[in-house]
Length: 416
Image (cartoon, rainbow, N blue to C red):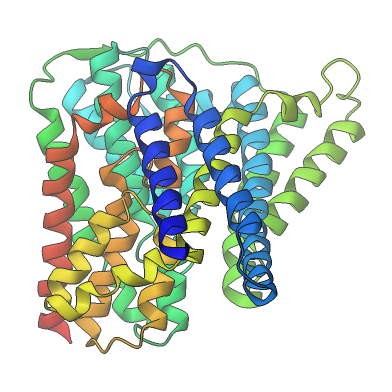
């Protein structure tokens, strides 16, 4: 019975993936499909628990999954509210106009976008970086085909930018706390990660020959908007500092920042004409529901032991190849439980190989649009960006990922 149950649950996960892939064909929103199959999976596990001990295990697994989902949800609510407000008031657009020339070639614009996303995600989390970067793309008013190229680059660059910092990616922090890599080894990852971004930029720039004329219509910024913009910047910086020094979850710092934003709006009497709480209502709840469904499915796969069985790759091949494949697998399975499974398995690897795993699970999710938080957020922001359209970039993304991984491997063996 247990084996049959596992087959059914794995089938649900496959159906959910197919629902996302063929969303344009079946005309059913991906959030509805993943949420339905995710919740039904857990219902089945509760109903068909063979004994009381197993039921308690399922309860603990669901509680753990809900805790992780709640932290992500609350963080996204706070970050999206900040960005929705600042974007509506024109602050983000004005900042972009300050750094961009009035006329720029499309290849150069693509290059600057990649560098900006890489650097910004190094000082902020990848979700915030994606939200800001998506606002940049939308402000350019490019044709759809070119917009999709920029979107693919943003997802890859954002995931690459945070891989070398313990505050930039959860999996990086997990591997660091396990003692397998140190701060110095992680910092060296930024160079091959940047090389991967540059390679992808070069590939995607082929065929871009036009010139973009940026109509700089600066929006008047009020004092209250400047204060809230400063709170947003301080919230990002304090999130990094508090997480590194006191292990405070980013969600808590961002919620504190959002609450301060509400109070500032009330202090400036700005809440009467434009209630700031209304900005919570305009965030993309479809994205949040999609996250909920995906993470429930991943939690289910973790509960039935599918993720732990993937670690058997290390018994079948050298760690350098297994790490590379783990990165590719993270495009379809959440990288956090994958990394946790590797760390708990007791696998012995040297420092360069742990560096390779850090890069792989941090960047490999970029290969599919559903493989990372950055991809899912970008998909919610650009209606033209679907699973099928993103898959068209799989080859250049795989090349860039392979270049970055190879650079990580050789640099690790050269320096350590």
